[in-house]
Length: 251
Image (cartoon, rainbow, N blue to C red):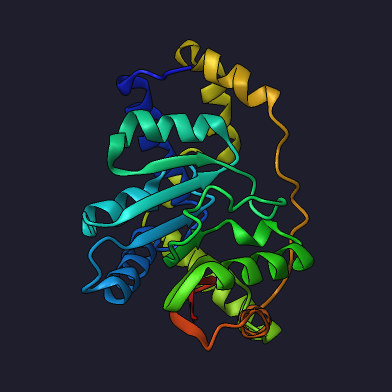
């Protein structure tokens, strides 16, 4: 099921460009998340960091590059994206196939070693509110005191009129950055499906059950309420542009 390094480089680069259509100032958001993880793990000899819904490992690879002593575990349910990450980024990141929120989905974690940080970008909005509540509780239970959960995602501001303005501000920023000149989601996947170098791993992907996409429309304050309920001591937004937020919850 292996993918050549050349094919992986091509499709990971196209993934990076495609994702810019959907995440306003994506690279800055990654930088902010990495800054927070670096701050929280400073002085720890071998911090354990979990990337939820990692795709091909875009954020996980940046974390491993910034914090080379960290053990970075990248989790996703899609075997094709995981294999692209393995082939492109190599051994700096450990890839795990698991479906977020399924019973026992965190069983791969070391049993007596707490997490220092869990991060996620543009993934948790796919979970229904009930599933998200469970995931927040499960992560709170696995994080050490002072550890953090960081969620970078599309979140509508609490006030509807402000949300409309924020959405427009984000769209204008993306236009200035020429984000809409790249592949969209459908075009990227159509290209993958037509590439014979990916046929074997695509066959594996087609054999897997795909994660349900219930979705939720929680605002930042809605997420903060669930995080406090889950046992996080301090929660808040550390960065925002348009609808793009980075929420931090401290255990």
